[in-house]
Image (cartoon, rainbow, N blue to C red; front, side):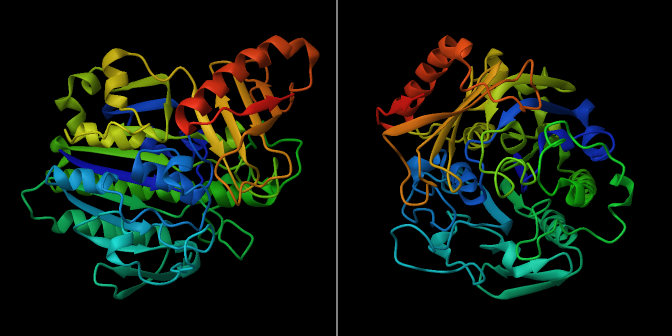
Length: 441
């Protein structure tokens, strides 16, 4: 079974709709839509490390941007697939090679070629930049190939990244199955230019698009940037449709499963001073779609084609899911869980556990009704991955306050609810991180 993992950057769950992503939205009849998928770490590098290692950020030690993934980890996603005789390939943003933070020797590869040992084990095609936002913009840029040669490209970045992926599929001739990860930068803002870059005119259809309720009434830059952001999402939708067409034209559709998801969402500086790094739904809730004719080859996925699955899924679960599709061994120490098993049993995670860094040293859970978040006072989570002390920060009732404007954390009549949520969160922290912290009100 061929597997394609199509990864956007900073894309909100609610951007998947008829207006913004008509192509993806129109794929439901041959896809499974997951309505409750959440990130495990709402920032770029840590989220990517979780996917590549099957572990939470505190366990793989990539708990902030600027810490490289362990080159000696023999259980990365690519290495596990390699053992199953897959060709594993990667195109786009990597964000797991540089050591500009943390305790390792300083090694800034943000705009340089990534050595083989820092590529997570990808063994076939490689065309990537550690920080694509620093090597490119909407008008072009450069990546580095498998032999560390610089490869320049001209034109719209997401189109070019997509074309590289399409060419890989068109030219693929091996009898081995392949895993291809396509890591786009869009709709992430363009670092250093204080805007979400889009092609001139692409934002016109979205200038009157209604703002999401969670943004309305709050400070931030959504009024200036939301149309640009949606234009980026819309172009990704076209890119993804072109890639799907290529898979079909190549005759690979019936033996392929394609996953579309993102690392985290975007709240447009309404909840803190930047775009993510919080437990709010806008930051945490992400799209997740599985498509491809290969869904018909698995009993668990076949019965869900054309349907929505509303169980809780973590971004972390992509790792085990991909290995499960490939019939590869899933390392027993993984915290990742296979969505294939969830579909088979009809039972998903009963809640989401999140770790938050860079804006705070925080932990959060999302249940069927509440979002509950805690953080270590006076810490931005930049110098350590774990804490033994947290203070309650956020409590939202997501049934009565879907926009999460009313923080209930100091409301006395929620004391019992907070106690219950605290117990769940403490159990998660002890089980996953091996520490027993204190949480204070």
